[in-house]
Image (cartoon, rainbow, N blue to C red; front, side, top):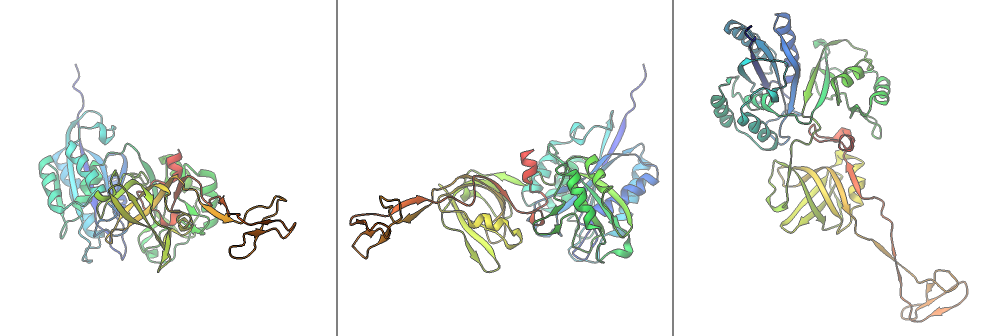
Length: 439
Protein backbone atom coordinates (compact mmCIF):
# COMPACT_ATOMS: atom_id res chain seq x y z
CA UNK A 1 0.00 0.00 0.00
CA UNK A 2 1.43 3.38 -1.02
CA UNK A 3 2.09 5.98 1.62
CA UNK A 4 0.00 9.15 1.30
CA UNK A 5 1.99 12.25 0.45
CA UNK A 6 1.92 14.73 3.31
CA UNK A 7 2.69 18.44 3.09
CA UNK A 8 3.61 21.20 5.47
CA UNK A 9 1.70 24.43 4.96
CA UNK A 10 3.23 27.74 5.93
CA UNK A 11 0.82 30.59 6.61
CA UNK A 12 2.45 34.01 6.43
CA UNK A 13 0.85 37.19 7.80
CA UNK A 14 2.16 40.74 7.25
CA UNK A 15 0.92 44.10 8.54
CA UNK A 16 1.81 47.72 9.37
CA UNK A 17 4.32 48.33 6.61
CA UNK A 18 2.92 51.58 5.19
CA UNK A 19 2.56 55.17 6.33
CA UNK A 20 0.59 58.28 5.46
CA UNK A 21 3.45 59.13 3.08
CA UNK A 22 3.02 56.02 0.95
CA UNK A 23 3.56 52.27 0.48
CA UNK A 24 0.86 49.63 0.94
CA UNK A 25 0.94 46.28 2.73
CA UNK A 26 -0.92 44.64 -0.17
CA UNK A 27 1.84 45.79 -2.53
CA UNK A 28 4.55 44.31 -0.34
CA UNK A 29 2.51 41.11 -0.26
CA UNK A 30 2.28 41.09 -4.05
CA UNK A 31 6.05 41.60 -4.43
CA UNK A 32 6.82 38.89 -1.86
CA UNK A 33 4.49 36.38 -3.51
CA UNK A 34 5.89 37.04 -6.99
CA UNK A 35 9.44 36.55 -5.70
CA UNK A 36 8.49 33.32 -3.94
CA UNK A 37 7.01 32.00 -7.19
CA UNK A 38 10.17 33.01 -9.07
CA UNK A 39 12.19 30.93 -6.58
CA UNK A 40 10.00 27.91 -7.21
CA UNK A 41 7.73 27.99 -4.16
CA UNK A 42 4.15 26.77 -4.61
CA UNK A 43 1.57 29.24 -3.30
CA UNK A 44 -1.92 27.94 -2.55
CA UNK A 45 -5.18 29.75 -3.25
CA UNK A 46 -5.78 33.47 -3.15
CA UNK A 47 -3.95 35.65 -0.63
CA UNK A 48 -6.10 37.32 2.00
CA UNK A 49 -6.75 41.00 2.66
CA UNK A 50 -8.34 41.30 6.09
CA UNK A 51 -9.67 44.61 7.39
CA UNK A 52 -9.49 45.12 11.14
CA UNK A 53 -11.27 47.44 13.58
CA UNK A 54 -11.75 50.81 11.80
CA UNK A 55 -11.20 52.60 15.13
CA UNK A 56 -7.73 51.17 15.81
CA UNK A 57 -5.60 54.05 17.03
CA UNK A 58 -2.54 53.61 14.81
CA UNK A 59 -4.25 52.56 11.57
CA UNK A 60 -2.96 54.21 8.40
CA UNK A 61 -5.94 54.12 6.04
CA UNK A 62 -8.13 51.03 5.78
CA UNK A 63 -6.40 49.08 8.57
CA UNK A 64 -5.79 46.08 6.33
CA UNK A 65 -3.43 43.14 6.88
CA UNK A 66 -2.52 40.40 4.41
CA UNK A 67 -1.71 36.72 4.54
CA UNK A 68 -0.96 33.88 2.13
CA UNK A 69 0.01 30.22 2.31
CA UNK A 70 2.65 28.11 0.60
CA UNK A 71 3.87 24.53 0.56
CA UNK A 72 7.05 23.81 2.52
CA UNK A 73 8.96 20.56 1.91
CA UNK A 74 11.94 20.92 4.24
CA UNK A 75 13.46 22.96 7.03
CA UNK A 76 15.82 24.50 4.49
CA UNK A 77 12.88 25.65 2.36
CA UNK A 78 11.27 27.19 5.43
CA UNK A 79 14.38 29.21 6.21
CA UNK A 80 14.80 30.27 2.59
CA UNK A 81 11.19 31.45 2.33
CA UNK A 82 11.39 33.21 5.68
CA UNK A 83 14.57 35.11 4.76
CA UNK A 84 13.18 36.16 1.39
CA UNK A 85 9.96 37.45 2.99
CA UNK A 86 11.71 39.34 5.78
CA UNK A 87 14.18 40.94 3.37
CA UNK A 88 11.31 42.26 1.23
CA UNK A 89 9.42 43.59 4.23
CA UNK A 90 12.51 45.33 5.58
CA UNK A 91 13.44 46.79 2.20
CA UNK A 92 9.99 48.10 1.21
CA UNK A 93 8.39 49.12 4.53
CA UNK A 94 8.38 52.78 5.57
CA UNK A 95 10.54 52.08 8.60
CA UNK A 96 11.66 55.70 8.74
CA UNK A 97 8.14 56.71 9.86
CA UNK A 98 7.53 56.66 13.61
CA UNK A 99 4.14 54.93 13.43
CA UNK A 100 5.22 52.25 10.96
CA UNK A 101 5.94 49.12 13.02
CA UNK A 102 5.79 46.03 10.79
CA UNK A 103 5.12 42.55 12.05
CA UNK A 104 5.41 39.22 10.24
CA UNK A 105 3.96 35.92 11.46
CA UNK A 106 4.97 32.43 10.29
CA UNK A 107 2.51 29.70 11.23
CA UNK A 108 3.35 26.20 10.02
CA UNK A 109 0.95 23.26 9.97
CA UNK A 110 2.62 19.90 9.54
CA UNK A 111 1.29 16.84 7.78
CA UNK A 112 -1.53 18.22 5.61
CA UNK A 113 -2.89 15.69 3.09
CA UNK A 114 -4.65 18.15 0.75
CA UNK A 115 -3.06 21.57 0.56
CA UNK A 116 -5.81 22.92 -1.72
CA UNK A 117 -8.31 23.02 1.14
CA UNK A 118 -9.39 26.37 2.51
CA UNK A 119 -7.82 27.47 5.79
CA UNK A 120 -11.11 26.77 7.57
CA UNK A 121 -10.88 23.14 6.46
CA UNK A 122 -7.34 22.75 7.79
CA UNK A 123 -7.20 22.28 11.54
CA UNK A 124 -6.54 25.79 12.82
CA UNK A 125 -6.60 26.46 16.55
CA UNK A 126 -9.95 27.96 17.54
CA UNK A 127 -8.20 30.62 19.61
CA UNK A 128 -6.61 31.98 16.40
CA UNK A 129 -10.04 32.44 14.79
CA UNK A 130 -11.39 34.02 17.98
CA UNK A 131 -8.40 36.35 18.11
CA UNK A 132 -9.06 37.43 14.51
CA UNK A 133 -12.70 38.27 15.21
CA UNK A 134 -11.64 40.13 18.34
CA UNK A 135 -9.16 42.23 16.33
CA UNK A 136 -11.95 43.15 13.91
CA UNK A 137 -14.51 44.07 16.58
CA UNK A 138 -12.31 45.30 19.44
CA UNK A 139 -8.90 46.77 20.24
CA UNK A 140 -6.14 44.16 20.71
CA UNK A 141 -2.69 44.71 22.25
CA UNK A 142 0.75 43.57 21.10
CA UNK A 143 1.08 41.62 24.35
CA UNK A 144 -2.10 39.64 23.64
CA UNK A 145 -0.75 38.85 20.18
CA UNK A 146 2.59 37.63 21.52
CA UNK A 147 0.83 35.39 24.03
CA UNK A 148 -1.35 33.83 21.33
CA UNK A 149 1.62 33.24 19.02
CA UNK A 150 3.41 31.40 21.80
CA UNK A 151 0.32 29.28 22.57
CA UNK A 152 -0.20 28.11 18.98
CA UNK A 153 3.48 27.78 18.09
CA UNK A 154 3.66 30.61 15.56
CA UNK A 155 6.92 32.44 14.95
CA UNK A 156 6.71 36.22 15.05
CA UNK A 157 9.20 38.78 13.75
CA UNK A 158 8.86 42.37 14.91
CA UNK A 159 10.35 45.42 13.23
CA UNK A 160 10.68 48.27 15.72
CA UNK A 161 7.63 47.96 18.04
CA UNK A 162 6.21 45.21 15.86
CA UNK A 163 2.59 46.32 16.14
CA UNK A 164 1.93 44.60 12.82
CA UNK A 165 1.90 41.17 14.46
CA UNK A 166 -1.70 41.92 15.56
CA UNK A 167 -2.99 42.23 12.02
CA UNK A 168 -0.66 39.52 10.71
CA UNK A 169 -2.17 36.95 13.10
CA UNK A 170 -5.70 38.14 12.37
CA UNK A 171 -5.15 37.89 8.61
CA UNK A 172 -4.12 34.24 8.98
CA UNK A 173 -6.96 33.18 11.24
CA UNK A 174 -9.97 35.19 10.06
CA UNK A 175 -12.94 32.94 9.15
CA UNK A 176 -14.53 33.90 5.83
CA UNK A 177 -18.07 32.54 5.78
CA UNK A 178 -18.90 35.66 3.74
CA UNK A 179 -16.20 36.99 1.46
CA UNK A 180 -15.49 39.34 -1.41
CA UNK A 181 -12.54 39.76 -3.77
CA UNK A 182 -10.41 42.75 -4.68
CA UNK A 183 -8.13 43.08 -7.67
CA UNK A 184 -5.38 45.62 -7.08
CA UNK A 185 -3.27 47.03 -9.90
CA UNK A 186 0.01 48.69 -8.96
CA UNK A 187 1.88 51.60 -10.50
CA UNK A 188 5.49 51.66 -11.56
CA UNK A 189 7.62 53.38 -8.86
CA UNK A 190 8.38 56.47 -10.94
CA UNK A 191 4.65 57.35 -10.85
CA UNK A 192 4.19 57.19 -7.08
CA UNK A 193 2.70 60.42 -5.80
CA UNK A 194 1.71 61.65 -9.26
CA UNK A 195 -1.83 62.11 -10.55
CA UNK A 196 -3.24 58.75 -11.61
CA UNK A 197 -3.94 58.39 -15.32
CA UNK A 198 -7.06 56.25 -15.63
CA UNK A 199 -9.42 56.51 -18.58
CA UNK A 200 -12.54 57.31 -16.60
CA UNK A 201 -14.95 56.50 -19.42
CA UNK A 202 -13.66 52.92 -19.35
CA UNK A 203 -14.56 52.71 -15.64
CA UNK A 204 -18.13 53.77 -16.44
CA UNK A 205 -18.34 51.16 -19.20
CA UNK A 206 -16.87 48.49 -16.93
CA UNK A 207 -19.40 49.32 -14.23
CA UNK A 208 -22.32 49.05 -16.68
CA UNK A 209 -21.19 45.61 -17.79
CA UNK A 210 -20.12 44.04 -14.49
CA UNK A 211 -22.33 45.57 -11.75
CA UNK A 212 -23.46 44.10 -9.36
CA UNK A 213 -20.88 41.30 -9.68
CA UNK A 214 -18.47 44.17 -9.09
CA UNK A 215 -19.58 47.06 -6.90
CA UNK A 216 -18.50 50.43 -5.49
CA UNK A 217 -16.71 51.24 -8.74
CA UNK A 218 -18.02 54.79 -8.81
CA UNK A 219 -20.47 57.22 -7.28
CA UNK A 220 -22.35 58.62 -10.24
CA UNK A 221 -24.28 61.18 -8.20
CA UNK A 222 -21.07 62.77 -6.91
CA UNK A 223 -19.01 62.07 -10.05
CA UNK A 224 -16.55 60.11 -7.91
CA UNK A 225 -14.39 57.28 -9.28
CA UNK A 226 -14.29 54.95 -6.29
CA UNK A 227 -11.73 52.47 -7.68
CA UNK A 228 -9.06 55.21 -7.66
CA UNK A 229 -7.18 55.93 -4.40
CA UNK A 230 -6.33 59.51 -3.47
CA UNK A 231 -3.12 58.81 -1.55
CA UNK A 232 0.54 58.48 -2.65
CA UNK A 233 0.42 54.68 -2.32
CA UNK A 234 1.49 52.25 -5.10
CA UNK A 235 -2.11 51.29 -6.02
CA UNK A 236 -3.37 52.56 -9.37
CA UNK A 237 -6.87 51.20 -8.85
CA UNK A 238 -8.74 48.50 -6.95
CA UNK A 239 -11.86 46.65 -8.14
CA UNK A 240 -14.11 44.86 -5.64
CA UNK A 241 -16.49 42.08 -6.51
CA UNK A 242 -18.22 38.84 -5.63
CA UNK A 243 -15.79 36.49 -7.38
CA UNK A 244 -12.21 36.44 -8.58
CA UNK A 245 -13.43 36.01 -12.16
CA UNK A 246 -15.64 39.08 -11.86
CA UNK A 247 -12.81 41.38 -10.77
CA UNK A 248 -10.43 39.95 -13.38
CA UNK A 249 -13.01 40.51 -16.12
CA UNK A 250 -13.56 44.07 -14.91
CA UNK A 251 -9.82 44.74 -14.78
CA UNK A 252 -9.53 43.80 -18.46
CA UNK A 253 -12.07 46.53 -19.29
CA UNK A 254 -10.30 49.37 -17.47
CA UNK A 255 -7.92 51.43 -19.61
CA UNK A 256 -5.09 53.62 -18.35
CA UNK A 257 -2.59 56.14 -19.70
CA UNK A 258 0.21 54.74 -17.54
CA UNK A 259 1.82 51.30 -17.25
CA UNK A 260 0.80 48.72 -14.65
CA UNK A 261 3.72 47.07 -12.85
CA UNK A 262 1.76 44.07 -11.52
CA UNK A 263 -1.65 43.00 -10.24
CA UNK A 264 -2.83 40.87 -7.34
CA UNK A 265 -6.24 39.38 -6.47
CA UNK A 266 -7.04 39.12 -2.77
CA UNK A 267 -9.94 37.33 -1.06
CA UNK A 268 -11.25 39.54 1.72
CA UNK A 269 -13.68 40.26 4.54
CA UNK A 270 -14.30 43.69 2.98
CA UNK A 271 -17.96 44.71 2.73
CA UNK A 272 -19.24 41.88 4.92
CA UNK A 273 -20.26 43.86 8.05
CA UNK A 274 -17.94 41.56 10.02
CA UNK A 275 -17.02 44.48 12.29
CA UNK A 276 -20.57 45.00 13.54
CA UNK A 277 -21.74 43.73 16.94
CA UNK A 278 -25.46 43.14 17.50
CA UNK A 279 -26.47 45.16 20.54
CA UNK A 280 -29.81 44.94 22.36
CA UNK A 281 -29.07 47.85 24.66
CA UNK A 282 -27.74 51.26 23.70
CA UNK A 283 -26.36 51.90 27.19
CA UNK A 284 -23.88 49.02 26.90
CA UNK A 285 -22.34 50.15 23.61
CA UNK A 286 -18.72 51.29 23.89
CA UNK A 287 -16.33 53.62 22.11
CA UNK A 288 -14.10 52.24 19.35
CA UNK A 289 -16.56 49.50 18.44
CA UNK A 290 -19.18 49.15 15.70
CA UNK A 291 -22.77 48.07 16.23
CA UNK A 292 -26.20 47.20 14.87
CA UNK A 293 -28.92 48.42 17.24
CA UNK A 294 -32.58 49.43 17.26
CA UNK A 295 -34.03 52.60 18.73
CA UNK A 296 -36.49 55.46 18.49
CA UNK A 297 -35.66 58.95 17.23
CA UNK A 298 -36.12 61.41 20.10
CA UNK A 299 -35.60 64.74 18.33
CA UNK A 300 -35.63 66.27 14.88
CA UNK A 301 -32.25 65.98 13.11
CA UNK A 302 -30.32 69.25 13.05
CA UNK A 303 -27.29 70.61 11.22
CA UNK A 304 -24.13 71.49 13.11
CA UNK A 305 -20.99 73.33 12.01
CA UNK A 306 -19.29 71.52 9.13
CA UNK A 307 -22.54 70.35 7.54
CA UNK A 308 -22.95 67.27 9.76
CA UNK A 309 -26.48 66.09 10.63
CA UNK A 310 -27.10 64.99 14.22
CA UNK A 311 -30.04 63.31 16.01
CA UNK A 312 -30.57 61.22 19.14
CA UNK A 313 -31.69 57.60 19.26
CA UNK A 314 -32.99 55.90 22.41
CA UNK A 315 -34.21 52.60 23.78
CA UNK A 316 -35.30 51.56 27.26
CA UNK A 317 -31.68 51.54 28.47
CA UNK A 318 -30.47 54.94 27.30
CA UNK A 319 -29.73 57.14 24.30
CA UNK A 320 -26.91 57.91 21.89
CA UNK A 321 -26.15 60.74 19.49
CA UNK A 322 -26.04 59.61 15.85
CA UNK A 323 -24.31 61.48 13.03
CA UNK A 324 -24.34 61.58 9.25
CA UNK A 325 -21.10 63.44 8.63
CA UNK A 326 -20.54 65.83 5.73
CA UNK A 327 -18.61 63.31 3.57
CA UNK A 328 -21.76 61.12 3.41
CA UNK A 329 -23.22 63.77 1.05
CA UNK A 330 -26.73 62.79 -0.15
CA UNK A 331 -27.23 60.34 2.71
CA UNK A 332 -27.63 63.42 4.93
CA UNK A 333 -30.77 64.36 3.00
CA UNK A 334 -32.36 61.10 4.16
CA UNK A 335 -31.34 61.73 7.77
CA UNK A 336 -32.81 65.27 7.63
CA UNK A 337 -36.21 63.75 6.89
CA UNK A 338 -36.35 61.63 10.05
CA UNK A 339 -38.98 62.64 12.60
CA UNK A 340 -39.38 62.22 16.34
CA UNK A 341 -40.71 58.72 17.19
CA UNK A 342 -39.48 57.09 13.96
CA UNK A 343 -38.17 53.61 14.77
CA UNK A 344 -34.83 52.66 13.22
CA UNK A 345 -32.21 49.96 12.99
CA UNK A 346 -28.84 51.72 12.72
CA UNK A 347 -25.43 50.43 11.62
CA UNK A 348 -22.27 52.28 12.56
CA UNK A 349 -19.28 52.81 14.83
CA UNK A 350 -18.64 54.88 17.94
CA UNK A 351 -15.60 57.14 17.87
CA UNK A 352 -13.68 59.20 20.42
CA UNK A 353 -16.56 61.61 21.12
CA UNK A 354 -19.08 58.85 21.75
CA UNK A 355 -21.17 59.64 18.67
CA UNK A 356 -22.41 56.81 16.45
CA UNK A 357 -21.03 57.35 12.94
CA UNK A 358 -23.80 56.05 10.67
CA UNK A 359 -22.94 53.63 7.86
CA UNK A 360 -26.52 52.76 6.95
CA UNK A 361 -29.99 52.74 8.51
CA UNK A 362 -33.20 50.78 8.13
CA UNK A 363 -36.42 52.69 8.83
CA UNK A 364 -38.65 50.14 10.56
CA UNK A 365 -41.64 52.33 11.43
CA UNK A 366 -42.51 55.93 10.60
CA UNK A 367 -44.46 58.23 12.84
CA UNK A 368 -47.46 59.94 11.23
CA UNK A 369 -46.89 63.61 10.55
CA UNK A 370 -49.84 66.01 10.34
CA UNK A 371 -50.40 69.53 9.10
CA UNK A 372 -53.28 71.72 10.35
CA UNK A 373 -55.52 73.12 7.58
CA UNK A 374 -58.59 75.35 7.70
CA UNK A 375 -61.86 73.39 7.46
CA UNK A 376 -63.56 72.69 4.14
CA UNK A 377 -66.74 74.57 3.28
CA UNK A 378 -69.83 72.61 2.22
CA UNK A 379 -69.14 73.96 -1.29
CA UNK A 380 -65.74 72.22 -1.30
CA UNK A 381 -63.58 75.34 -0.97
CA UNK A 382 -61.05 75.63 1.85
CA UNK A 383 -62.33 78.36 4.24
CA UNK A 384 -60.48 81.41 5.58
CA UNK A 385 -60.26 82.68 9.14
CA UNK A 386 -62.95 85.28 9.91
CA UNK A 387 -60.77 86.80 12.64
CA UNK A 388 -59.74 85.83 16.14
CA UNK A 389 -62.64 84.05 17.88
CA UNK A 390 -64.96 84.55 14.90
CA UNK A 391 -64.58 81.16 13.24
CA UNK A 392 -64.23 80.71 9.47
CA UNK A 393 -65.76 82.18 6.34
CA UNK A 394 -65.87 80.87 2.77
CA UNK A 395 -64.73 83.50 0.27
CA UNK A 396 -66.44 81.61 -2.54
CA UNK A 397 -70.01 81.22 -1.24
CA UNK A 398 -69.98 83.36 1.90
CA UNK A 399 -70.88 80.54 4.30
CA UNK A 400 -69.77 81.16 7.88
CA UNK A 401 -68.71 78.54 10.40
CA UNK A 402 -68.67 80.02 13.89
CA UNK A 403 -67.44 76.93 15.81
CA UNK A 404 -65.21 75.34 13.18
CA UNK A 405 -61.87 73.69 13.99
CA UNK A 406 -58.87 73.06 11.81
CA UNK A 407 -58.54 69.73 9.99
CA UNK A 408 -55.45 67.62 10.65
CA UNK A 409 -54.16 66.36 7.30
CA UNK A 410 -51.55 63.56 7.24
CA UNK A 411 -48.52 64.74 5.32
CA UNK A 412 -46.85 62.23 3.05
CA UNK A 413 -43.24 61.64 4.13
CA UNK A 414 -40.40 62.23 1.67
CA UNK A 415 -38.74 58.97 2.72
CA UNK A 416 -40.24 55.49 3.01
CA UNK A 417 -39.58 52.49 5.22
CA UNK A 418 -36.53 50.50 4.20
CA UNK A 419 -32.73 50.69 3.92
CA UNK A 420 -30.60 53.76 3.19
CA UNK A 421 -26.79 53.83 2.96
CA UNK A 422 -23.87 56.21 2.63
CA UNK A 423 -22.43 56.60 -0.91
CA UNK A 424 -19.38 54.60 -2.09
CA UNK A 425 -17.16 57.65 -1.57
CA UNK A 426 -17.88 57.54 2.19
CA UNK A 427 -18.22 53.80 2.74
CA UNK A 428 -15.98 52.04 5.25
CA UNK A 429 -14.02 49.07 3.91
CA UNK A 430 -15.95 46.62 6.08
CA UNK A 431 -19.43 48.08 5.60
CA UNK A 432 -21.72 45.87 3.51
CA UNK A 433 -23.40 47.79 0.65
CA UNK A 434 -27.12 47.32 0.15
CA UNK A 435 -26.58 45.57 -3.17
CA UNK A 436 -24.88 42.77 -1.23
CA UNK A 437 -27.59 42.72 1.46
CA UNK A 438 -30.31 42.44 -1.21
CA UNK A 439 -28.35 39.71 -2.93
